Each structure stands twice: as structure tokens, then as C-alpha cells.
Image 1: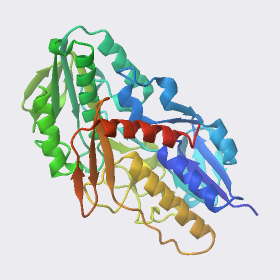
Image 2: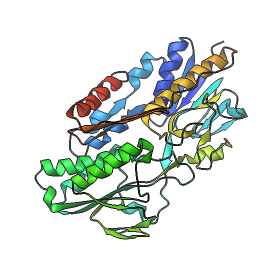
Image 3: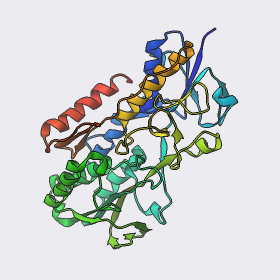
Image 4: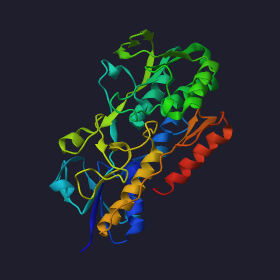
Amino acid sequence: MLKKVTVVGSGFAALTAIRTLRARDKNLKITLVSPKPEFTFLPSLIWIPSGLRARTDVLVHLDGFLRRMDVTHHAGMAVGIEDGGRRLRTDGAVIENDGLIIACGARYMKKLPGVEQAIIPCEGISSAEALKTRLAGMTKGTIAFGFAGNPKEPAAVRGGPMFEFLFGIDKQLKRENRRDRFNLVFFNPMQDPGQRLGPKAVAGLKSTMAKRDIEMHLGHKMKGFEPGKVVTEGGEIKADLIVFLPGMTGLAWYANADLPLSPGGFIKADAQCRVAGHERVYVAGDAGNYPAPDWLPKQAHMADLQAATAAENLITELNGQEPATTFRTELFCVIDDSKTGILVARTPKHNIILPPMRAMHWSKIFFEKWYLRKYR
């Protein structure tokens, strides 16, 4: 009898899990659950405001990939599990399985008063396009950029992309010969933002902002947003445009499914990506909380590593053996400004940061094309 595995999500973790599952078992019956068979290459959203990328460049339709992988797509959203995970409830059906991998990500916390005043550019293509439109319609003014975290989950933050939007728009305005008519301000509740990248990176980022004439409003707890301003305990920042990334938390259905959750709202997993108290149920990517260094952020690279680990261990369990595979803990990113890139790497033993280089920008473009070839 064919073994059935359900994968929830269509992002980095979900697709890597599918490739790993299929590589290990050609006969496995795999069902992918997501609203649409689409994948958005989120790292390239930073290039949409400048026109370097458009919707069609970063949105990949997965019909061909799913056909090649012999995967059935179920159009729907997960809403809960039953029978310890052997049944996944969606908004339209119940799907039975012998193994489950939850890889449908997280959501941004929108609890700050007036957060609707800000554009949250990493929410998706439409948000990045809205930022592009707003920029094109401005002739002058102040643009405020910032990000915050989840106080109950230190890793649930995405600071890197906000630095890329900040530096990329600075570069874009200079290229358009209108930077002198704009004031750019960066705000963050921490005095030293970007600490997950390492001490060297924090110093480098602050130095880069100073050299680019970007004002810094740091170390003040945020109170909210009002029309035309960011409000913090250290004062107000007047802004004609606010670009902001809130902290992250788990999807609402995780709690409704009676899954074990971390204080920050993410599904608790062990070093093998198994969900406690649920046989043959795994989590990968942004959806999970893992035993890892507190500097390890939620990023696509780690989602891939966790997904491969989850899939390997699930196959091992389905074959009647004890899973033992764990994932590497490492941070690799290129902070890009659409012309140059700063390489940042961190492992438990090393922390490397390289100065802005044209080659790093091209390496990011090369990686995008190489990565997406697997899914086009």
C-alpha cells in the first residue's frame, strides 16, 4: 500500500521538503496543500521598487514542477489537524496521511496602533508594488524605514530585508538624481539593530547609514503610527512614507490545532524537526521554533535546511527506523542595494562580514536564477 505524505505550504520549506521526499521515495503519494500552486521568491522583492524585478520575475507557477514531482495539489488552507496529525483539515476537505510536514510559514504581528499607515513590503508582491507606486508619485519628503521583533520569540524577526529596502531605495533615488530632495530615517527599538548578523555587521550597518546620510532613531520602544508620523517613546518621526516590518508569530490555526507552541506562537520542534506529542508530524521553516542559537533568524536558507531534515527524518520513520538527522545552524545573506552587496555569514564558530562589492550583487542575481530553475 502506498504511503501518503501531506506537505502544507508552497514556500521555500515546503518545496524543498517535496524535492527531498521524492528523491528518497519514488513511490510516495505526496499531496501539497496551499491556496494556489504558486511560489514567490521573497528575497527578490527588494528589487521591485526600482524596477529591477517585476511580478512575473518573482512569481513562479508550480504546475510543471508538481507534475515532474508527481505531486497532487489541493487548493485550500489548513485549519486544523485530527487524530494526532493523521488527518489534516482544510477549509474545503479532510486529507488523510501517514506523515505530515507543516511548512506554511508565519504571519506579521500587526498589533501596533495605526500599523495600517505603513507599507509592509515583505508581505508579498502586491506590497512591494505598492511601495514602488508610492515612490514614483513622490517628488520630495521623508521616508521612514524600520523593523521590530516578537518580544516572546527573539528569532522571529527579519531585519536583513529592511536594510536592503533602505539601501536600495537610497541608491535608487541617487540614480534618479533626486536623493537630495528626500530625507531617509531608520528607526528601531534596539540601540544596536541587526545583532543576529553579528557584532561586526551591526557596526558596519550603522557606519553605512552614516555614510549615506541616513538618520538613525534607535533605542526607543515603539508606540504606534499616526498619519504622517512614527510614534516612539523617544519622540515622533515625521514621515511622508513609512516602510515597516513587524515581528513575526505563528499562523492562527496552529493554536486552534492544539499543537505545542512556543511563547511566541510557533510550533515547537526538536532538533530533528519533529513536533512533540505528534507521531510522524514535522515542521520546517518559519512555522517552527527549534533548539538553536538565539542569533539564528528566520530566513530562506534555514528553511531549506530544516525542510530537508524534516523530510529525511519522516522517510526514516515511515521505514520503521528512528530519525536522527539534524540541521546545520548557519546564517548566510547578502545585504544588497541593487548595485553592490555586503556578505554576512555566521556559524557557531565564525562571523564574517565583507565590505560592499559589485560581485556580491551579481552573486545574488545568479543564485536567484539558479534556485528558480528547479521550479520553473
